[in-house]
Image (cartoon, rainbow, N blue to C red):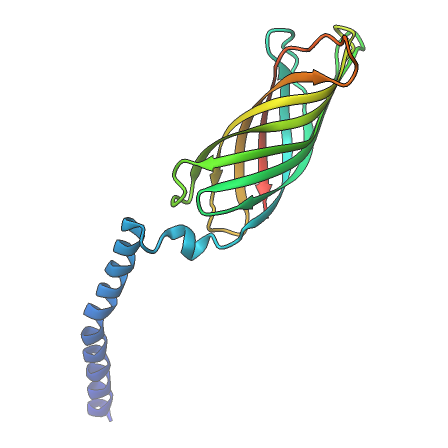
Length: 198
């Protein structure tokens, strides 16, 4: 009985040893395909093209006007191709100053075209540009703006092969065209956000 068990164990070990080169070769071949781009990591793992996300705690401040950082919340979605994406989002931020003056910013819809700089990486850097409908009410400067803003963006999208992605993004929003003629254009707004995509 012991001899039979030993023989079976030896046979199993032999089969595993024989199969090892082919397994190793298959792994190496897959790695080479991913490296040379003929079968990219994106094609294998990043097959989702529509990514809804929630912005958690974006920080908004006006450049060159006041240093108040406003917490906020936002929602959006991203439609991706292999090397680029179109992004649509809505976000708002609000803060009340020590002098009981309120500051409110709302951007939406914000439409962006994004270009991935390293699209085959699980953590892809990107840059982009677009426009947004902006509503800004500043109780400190007594300024109000409703109109169109130009936007430039930069960020990184991490864990692209997982079900939950992390997106770190910085937008500079420059008011360009006011709904009401004669409105003084506010200074650019800096928006830094962390988002979770599903």
